[in-house]
Length: 314
Image 1 (cartoon, one colour):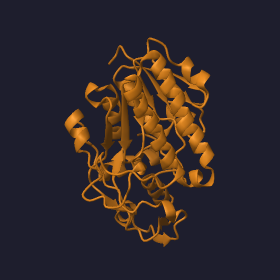
Image 2 (cartoon, one colour):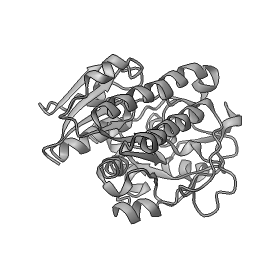
Image 3 (cartoon, rainbow, N blue to C red):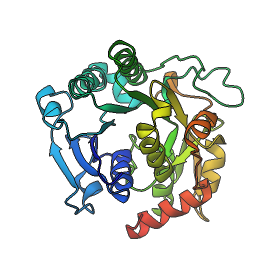
Image 4 (spheres, rainbow, N blue to C red):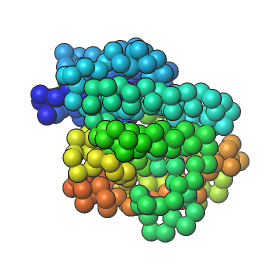
């Protein structure tokens, strides 16, 4: 892959910086885009590499998006998005503009240059009822928030470009990703929030009864999946999940993270209408098409995250 050039939108975000890291490890040249509303310059500070450049710009600005594309670009990995469920309920227009209009701008730039696209979606688009032994790609969709609705709309637009223009598009749905560089506030992931609070000797707060489950995927495994799937000819036109295939309740996760002296408390849910009761991925399609399987166990991932939060070393 050392001869390739890739556009990465949302390159300074949590997952974006891990995708950039994975691409640099493979010798790829990267043209990044981020408006730093969710991402951070600290996330990419270590990438002092002539193969990585980043534009401070908004994916909603079509001119900025198009400026990153030319006939040297081999692929685009589109990660730029608004991702906060509660904010989407409070202000759905922001999520529509970034997630739908922004994706349309990326699709047009890809179409004009005939550039393959890896569109990173979300498992939150699925109907979480009757999930059975794991959610596969044929499971019904039922977005429960404007965030999920806007992400599903962006996937539908991408699929239309695949069918209508023969654009090589792959839709990627990682499950709950966690790891270093993830935010630890309300917009962050539960693992990062719990580990941060445990290190500060603060109470781990569980929304609701804690029986809700998550399929927790470590950041490096997620990035490897995104890069592999984007460049595979076998995945073009496909929707592909990525997860461990194992679920853990929030109660059990809190017990795993909490060290001696850390309290655990159940509190009222701040957005119960969009709570997901059960999330468990069926990752068999990614395994069959890509030979991809997660490498980092939950215990190892939590340990790595704790070490990074203490020492700043991912």
